Image 1 (cartoon, rainbow, N blue to C red):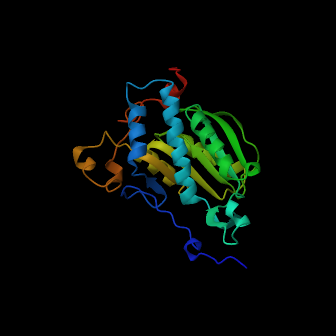
Image 2: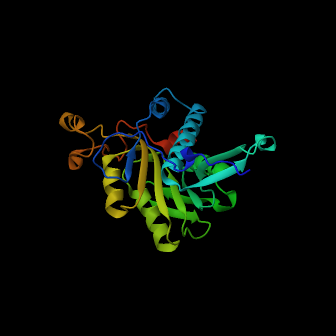
Image 3: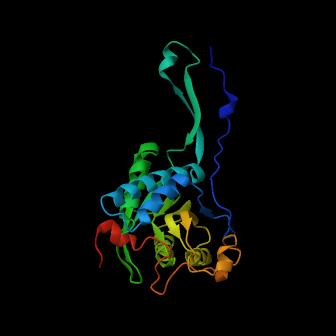
Length: 264
């Protein structure tokens, strides 16, 4: 007897818990107390290694799950369960993330090294590992790309940039230019951040409007009291999250420094 189909699994839906803003549909500012709790600890002056790496691992393990649910394609899956030996109805039926889509996680050294490794490792468990790779790019604040190891074209791939602090947008824009000019046509580009600024969002949307941005938090702490009382993006041109040294306020300091315990 052929098992009956359960209609509840005909469609897969997923809704992100996110904050209201006026930055456009490509921007997702997450409303997630669990992630905010861990990020608050991470940004505290009382937090040091090895807790810093543990917090980054927890944050990006959760972020890659949210991104995969929201951005990756799904397809139906039917698998015989352990009960199928005794009951023909013993099948596992559910939509799953399509494991055969190529995915590239990009390590933007040095702040992005741990986040990219976490995402890369997680992807290998639910995607086809033969289609998952990690690229490496050496890029410094204000100094541009000094070297890279890119494992081939990104045609029809999902390319992910796990970079904790998105301050000016210069890094992501330069790296996006590198891929788009030299490495084929990606299926989509996704930036995954802990904190972003209004300045960053304006820069990436100006130069690469197709980039999907996911962030736990938006920081615009140097804006006026009037601006801080408005929905983010309402008066975008008046919002300010960067100080004169291009560090995020309130932010969490330089994540390249705290992740590597190297303050040079």
